[in-house]
Image 1 (cartoon, rainbow, N blue to C red):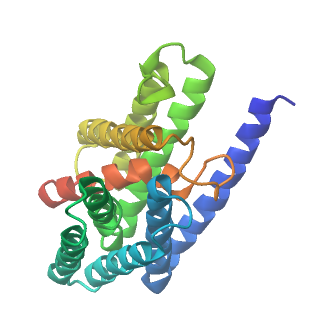
Image 2 (image 1 turned 45 degrees about the horizontal axis):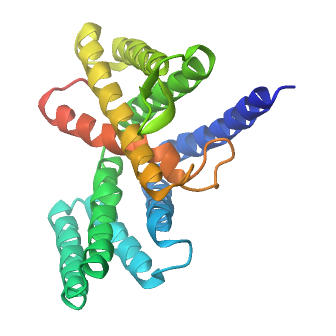
Length: 267
């Protein structure tokens, strides 16, 4: 059995396990779904900080970020989004205080304060729609992004010959990007034909938009890893890397879908 075949089996097995957890969370919803969202937020924040600070550095800042991120998510889940923004504002105040005590040394002042705020904006803020989107909509966006990632991986590893953006992600290919787009659009169109409230053809441009932002999110996290000189954000998910490696596309695609959903009633 080749190494690539073994890697694919591990990757598929991990993917099935993650899918089972997601299905259970969407079935039970309530506190179970909220708990999964909070867990993803905490692990993704920890991985994000570990990219730049090392595994055991600035524990207090990490815990504070997780607490504020959880506050944003819980308050939004409780239909109090205005209070969730207060948590984000509180994060900025704490980052400003940290900067105030370090401002004489620019590197020590901007780096921790900037990363602290970037983490809050990147992970819990972009995760907020997961706390209020309906089950049909969550299944749609999660499945669309998962299919985009899966098609990109399998098409890219088997047919990829032209690098998409080698300075950002040397392993991603243009062929994989096209496969990702096609797979996402096909899924969105079929899902829309079954569950949608509008003509299924309207789901074609929606699929294009979702895929574009999913790939953008993937490339953004790849750039973060390149700047930190690491291959994966973590090792929690065999064959996939870390939580942030799996959530990167969803973090960009889900807020865009949530915004579109406010203006165009696809479901």
